[in-house]
Length: 122
Image 1 (tube, one colour):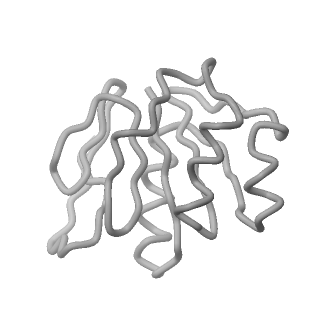
Image 2 (cartoon, helix red, strand yellow):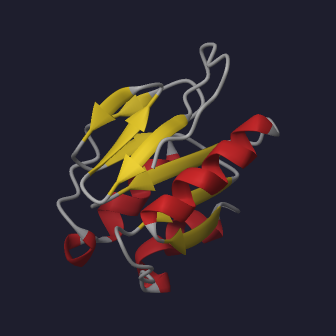
């Protein structure tokens, strides 16, 4: 699905998604990525949902978002709370949703100037 925005500016937004990739400001990514308003990180190192561990979530502590949207692929899956305990202890909200929902929700929150991070898996 393509999402159309008239003026992207410098803010990173999802402009499209499919089962095997996402577009961020019209640039295609087909591996797990982390998207914030100012940057796209391709160094998260997550291969798929089943390989998630505590270190993958601790990655977000230095980014200091208000909320982390975890896009779990084509279907919604829930990470065990022990994996992201460090985030909740730091006051960071964690929401698990399928990747298309994470992309749409991220775009809404970033437009509201919320400090949101989307972590996208396929």
